[in-house]
Amino acid sequence: MVNLFGAVGSRLAAMWLSMLSFTAASQHLAQIRRSLAELEASAQELFEAGRLADHLPALGQALEAAERHLTAETSAEGQELFFMVRVLRGTIHQQAAGLDDLAVEDLNAFTLSNPRFWDEYYAGVSGNGQFDWYGTWDTEILWPHGRTTLGSVIRPWLRREDSILMLGCGRSDMSEQMYREGFKNITNADISATLLDSLRQRLAPEMPGMSWRWMNASALPLLTRADVVLEKGTLDALKENPGLFQAAVREAYRVLTSEGLLISVTDSDLELEKLARFSCKAVSGEVLDGKTLHVFICQKLAESWFSTLKSWSRLEL
Ligand SMILES: C[S@@+](CC[C@H](N)C(=O)[O-])C[C@H]1O[C@@H](n2cnc3c(N)ncnc32)[C@H](O)[C@@H]1O
Image (tube, rainbow, N blue to C red; front, side):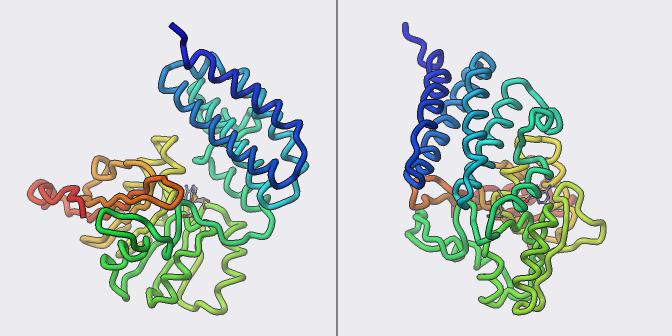
């Protein structure tokens, strides 16, 4: 019987290497992006089949070649791709060899849970323009109840006066859109000081009331309090490092006021209620590119109420 997984890693690695000999600029980058997505999917299949380590040398070599090639790219898309390749190489090494974030860094690669990656990334991508993971406040999504925006699913859970902690705000314009709608008490937190400086400089004059603060989601400042912790993609970035991920969920629980909400927008099932005393409802929708997005609305439960309220769990909205 042909072993599908046996061939796929080296086939894709060879494809990568041959693809890098093309030159036509933007088409070339689009092609690299597609191949990168394919390579990532195949690496995932190999990982699930327990075969990733066998293909590590070929995959690592192909990704290093891609990185060398992309170093010369000056366009914003080329720079984004350079960082994506670096993270993919780091993540593949991590999964194949069980390396931690620091050991991956020794290979001159990165994982998304490594704080140093993000600072380098934000310093390295030109024109710190807006960029959203998965979608933003006004992105249309096909939910079971019809096509509406991401904001329309989150909005009913918020009060105008709520203090909202945007955890791992990145370059998303979600908090700007929310501010314009009347949610003025927003703290944008991120691990990259480079990013926060540029956001503060650009937005502080027109948005008094918003603040930008350096925070590590896994060890939030002691006195932080929020009625709502809102995150999109940040816990996904941390989840390859279970220690950091679990600490971040517990920290979100700690800083929330009584019955406060952790709202999580993610492409995976984070099972937040297993890590802290939350009761979660979930709604899932399809973004234009066909990918599935989940919004978890998780209410903080007081310890003594936990067992009695556990029944309020994961209703489909
Ligand atoms: C996947 S990006 C999502 C950015 C943004 N929320 C969005 O939806 O586009 C993850 C963000 O989390 C930040 N981040 C990573 N690790 C972090 C940590 N330990 N504490 C706080 N922020 C972190 C990164 O700098 C990055 O901006």
